[in-house]
Amino acid sequence: MQGKKLRVAILFGGRSAEHDVSRASAANVLRSLDPERYETMLVGITRDGRWLPADAGNGAGTGASELVVPEAGPQLSFLPGGHGRVVLAQGDQAMRELPAIDAVFPVLHGPHGEDGTVQGALELADVPYVGSGVVGSAVSMDKDVAKRLIRDAGLPTSRFVSFTAAAPLSYDEAVRAVGTAEVFVKPANMGSSVGVSKASNAQEFKAACELAFRYDRKILIEESVPNAREIECSVLEDGKGDTHASELGEIVPDSRHGFYSYTAKYTDAAGAALVIPARLSKEQSDTFKALAIKTFNTLCCDGMARIDFFLSGDRILVNEANTLPGFTNISMYPKLWEASGLPQGKLMDVLIEHALARHQRAQAVSVHR
Image (cartoon, rainbow, N blue to C red; front, side, top):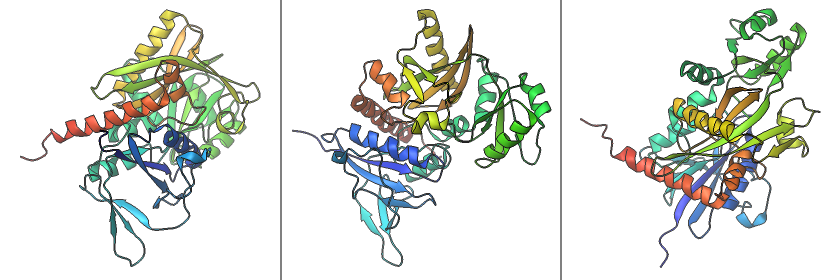
């Protein structure tokens, strides 16, 4: 006789510029969850931060490429210390409690979702959730903080400098700091290459900084690594706490884009080729995998992360960690695990098992005297 299905809430949408990417990722996650094992509840987060039930019109059988966030409706809240209990409320109507949630899958990218804020709310609700905790999520989201930790741990990374609008750097000062005339300019807290551009003179640098400051109060300037290949590795922690590195993949952007931009990732079907497995020697592959796990641990990640690298000649550089990587049908994280022998449905099982096991271990740590 089959046991009780686990009730899993999928959070998607959100307040960040990656709202639409999240909707596409969540559709793929929903299709990958085994309906014989899981009962799902969809929670759409609007661009202004309201949490709304979103099951209507978002069925797994629709084959939709992205889920829809409702524009209005009763708001959903997890009860603090409620062990997965959720309530609905609208206007002056009395709150109505729904069946408790066993685990949450926050399919959220960028600020207000991937940066530890939602993770903190779920910790307060005392409910298991997929992915890294508050610390790992926060430090990995902030590219400046992450690169400082990576550098201080002795791991190879590109030269960088960060600044805010209150204490700006000129193009010449940035170039002296990173050592190359061509630089990348990025919002410190953003993903999916949103707000990222290249600059090779003062005019381009000014425009690039203005764009980046649209998305964050702090921006990161990085050296442009010549002839860099973009190599990625998926890291997965199982319910026992063992960490595994996937086979490696390579992103080859179309020459029209120049780098792996938002357009190349999500709006241009021919924007980039994904080469899986990456064409590397065994020695190189072993080095990348070891560095991926070291980076995962250095940044206090758990559950999952995609670790991104640059390879320029013999120079291997850790670029960044993504604690809630894309889960669209063309995303590298699930594709690398498929190439490693773990289909996406089984990957979902491992991620949820890890969430439940981590939560159980946390219950054993007393916070009382």
